[in-house]
Image: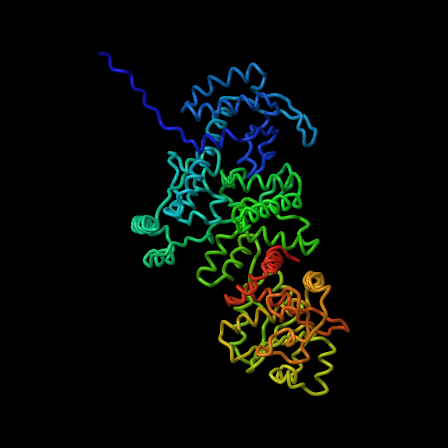
Amino acid sequence: MTKPLIHFSSLLDRAAFEHLQNKTLLPSFSHYDVWLYEHSVGFTVAKMMDMDLLAETKSAVVSALENGTDFRDFKNRLKPYLMAKGWWGEQVMLDPVDGVAKTVQLGSTRRLRVIFQTNLATAYAAGQWARIQEDKQMFPYLKYIASTAEHKRQSHMTYYGKIWAADDPIWQSIFPPNGYGCQCTVRQLTKKQALRERNEDINRQPERFTEQQKINAQNGVLDDGTDDIQWVDFTNPRTGQTVKIPFDVTPTFAHNHNNRLEDLQNLLRDKHGLDIQEGIWDTLRQYIEKRGGNGNIDELIIAHANDIPNPKWHESSMAIMREGKRLYLKYIDLIKKANSIQQPHLAIIEIMKREGVELGLPSLKVASSQSELMQEMVEALQVYPTNWLKLSNQIGKIRVEGQANRAFHSFVTDTLIRDFTHGIKPRYLPFKEHINKNLCKHGDSLILSNLERTKQARMAIYIHEFAHRLQSIMPDLQDLFTRLFNERTKNDTIQKLNDMLPENGRIYDNKEKGKRNHFPNVYYGKLYKRGGLDEPLELMTMIFESLLGGESWRYQELDTRRELLYFGLAILVRWHK
């Protein structure tokens, strides 16, 4: 009896196949015409403007993936067709963007190889990412694996052996392939496997790891961070859009290859604007609520790939909140991680850094009769944007002293200096030496620290009181918070703060007044008489203290009014004046 022939073939990567097959056709003149995340949802070939040509090319790539076709067979199928259609060699084409006729390279064997390799590599990467998401509960870590190429790229070696959580936002920018022909990959690991491999790598190549990484490994901790990754601004020469990407990743590859839901969201926003995008998600939330869900689909629409802020983000309070929400969702995993160790301010600081905000200024102008307070003040304020701190230096000095039971800020004006000549009021006695020696100048600030509080609480006080200084030196920043306050309280009357509290919780002086409406606590709504007007001067200070001050309970309190959290986050990240 004749034995049947048995044919062996590799199994089809179903997730990769479906990802590639479901891509829509996007004609383009330049590879920059299809931008970043658009590659996840669109099939494109630069200079291929004809839809029939594009459809046939996609069909050939999909067939190659489905059938395991090698490049030779792929070329033999597609090359005659493209040549017959005239899409081969150098030709003159009209650039639709500037209307200029240009000599361009159409089809060639080299270009076919790039088309073949790039589309298959990104499809397999998309399939791998889908499986990573399915298995991340059991295998929560990813390790960046070195390229299998004979000649490895020096630029990608930065990532070799690095381990991050599968949910870490860094994978939205460096999930391989990270360039044409890149053969890097990742391996999914349990925590036990990840720690074992980290220790093996340290023993094999100790010079590649920092002392902190070695200590972390000994303590069973995996935290490679992203401090050694250099981020650069890249401007799309076709559209003028600027995004931040790792300097060693090819710009059109600096996105995750299978964030289809987020990428469709971004395309919707780009084509039709933010309002229609928000409307669609609101409708979906309402639908989920009606069907018995909790209506919270925000984590399903995390905008990791959405790196383009709304240029009109500050034109309304709602726009600011929307921008803050975009940032919050983009970095939700980072925020969750910081919350889990009760240090949410670390996430806010890291978000600012990753979004390109330079922080801190060691040469901050601070004076005090107590060197410890001066050092604390300088240390505490390093979480503020450098530009803000530089402006503070230009305007004057911060003079900090300590006293039990209270804390405050006073901005020194010529009027206040004249008042000093009539005798020092009790509140300013801690600054007696500064005043008697005529050291106080217009533009300085007097900040009193409460010495009865812990150091951590004092650090939060410094952040809060410096925000009061910002209100005087950056009035346009305060105007944003005043606008928000007025919008939220337009139907509220001014009341005593104590009257907004229960009988057993009244802690304020009866002269302290404010408005109630929708704040985490009544102090957010406190008003001050300034220039004959009632000014809301605690909304900004309380939000900044809650986000940057390091006291977890303050952050959690602010999180009960998350729209205010969004507002403050957007300001800290986007306000660069």
